[in-house]
Length: 555
Image (tube, rainbow, N blue to C red; front, top):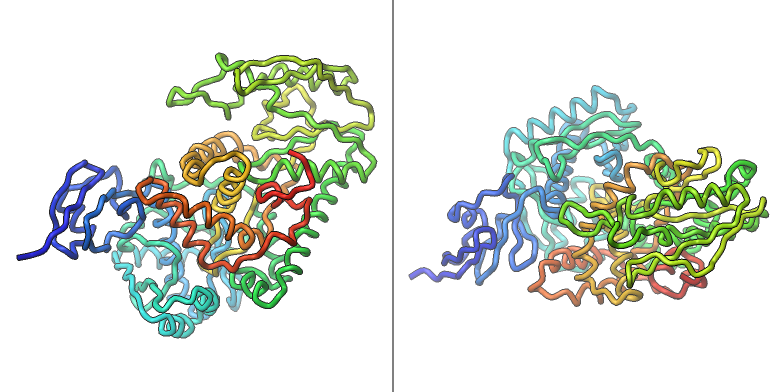
C-alpha cells in the first residue's frame, strides 16, 4: 500500500492525497491549475520553490506565474542563464558580466573579446538564445559535494564563484545544468527554456541590454526608457570599483578577512564626501540664478542625510541654506485623492497643495515673508502655528520629497532658478559576474532595519508594504529621474556587510505561517554569502547612520 500525504492547494482551495515523492508539476497537472500565465514556481508553506520539488510531508501550496515578484525573478534569472550559455557557445573565451538594471532591462557586457562588441555580434547571440529557448531544454538542478562543484565551475572558468562557495562552508552545493553548461544561481529557475518566450537582446552602449517582459502584461516587452544619466552613474562607479579591485561580493568578503574593511569603509565615505562637495560647487557656480534645490529619490535612499550633508558643503561655499518640508503642504484628509482601491493615495501629487506651495515659493524668491503651513498626521488637518520663513540674497532653499523632480510641483518657478538632484542607492557591486544585487533589495534591507529601529515596524510589516511603495515609485519618481541636473549614488560598498547582522535578527522573527516568510527567507539566504562588518567604524555623518543609528544629525 502506497503511503500518501495531504496537499492543500491555495489556488483552488482544495485538498487531496498524493503519493510520497509526487512533484509539484504533477500536482498542478492533476488539480488542473491554470493561471493567467504559465506556472513557473510555487510557494510551499510560504516558501518559494521550483516545480520539480517532491512532496514527502503535508503541505500548503500556491502556484505562481511571472506576475508575482518571485516569478519575475525566476524568469530573469533563467533568461540570464540562457544568455550565459549562448555567449559561451559563440565566444568560448569571453566572460559575460551581468552588470545592473537600467532602461527597464539588464545591462550586460562581454570581457576578453578580441574586438569590440558589434551589433551583428549581439544579433548572433540573441539568435542563439532563441534556438536554445525553441529547443525547450530543461534546467536541471543538481546537488553534489561542494568540492566537486567548485572543481566543475573552475573547469568552466567561473572562478568568480569559487570564493563565495568556500565562504558558505556547506558540505553540499546545488547548481544548475543546461546541457553541458553549469550555472550557480542564488535562487530558483523556471522548469525549462521553453518558458522564456518573451525577451530581446539589443546593442546598448558598449554592451547589450537584455529586455524583459512587463510583469503585469507578460506577453509584452518592457518599453525602453532612455536613462543616460543613470547609466553614466553606474558606469562611473563600476570604473571606480575596478580601480579599487572590488567588483563582486567575494572582494568585499576578502577585505573583511584580510583586515582591509576599515580602509574600504573610509575610502567609500571619502568618495561620498567628495561627490557631495562637487555638487555644492556646481550649485555655487550657478548661485546667481539658482535659489531652489530640489532633492528626490525612492524610499530608503538616504535623501534626508544627503540633504543635511549638502547643506554643510553649501555653507563651506559661503551660502546659507534653508529647509522647507513638503510634508507641510498635504491637503486636508477629506481632499486627499483615492487610489484604484479606494484608499487614500498620499503619494499622489494632488495629495499636496501644489498651488499654495508654488505661491509661497514665488513669494520667498521675491523676498517676501511667508507663514509656513503645518500638517497634523494625527488629525489629517492643516494648521498654522506662526512659523514664518524669509529668504535673503545669500539664502538658498532646499526642498526634499518624492515629487521633487516633477515639473508640476514647481510649475511657477523658472527652470534656471532650480537645481534638481536625484538620489538613490545604486548598488555598484554584484554577487558574482552573473548574479546581480538589485538596488531595490539594497533599499528594502535599509528600510527593514530603519523601520524596526525607529518606527516599531516588524520585518513582516515592512515587507508587506514594499510592493505598494514600489508602485508609488514607479508612478511618481522614476519617470522624472532623468530631469535631474545631477545624480548621487548613496550606496556604500561595505553597507550590506554592516546591515547583515542587524537585518538577519529582524528577518528571523518572520514566522513560517506568514505570506511574507518567503521574502524573509530569500533575504536570509542572500545574507549567507556575506561576511559581517561591525558598525563601530561608520562615521557619525554617514548616510548609513540614518538607518542603523548613531548619526550626529538630528532627524
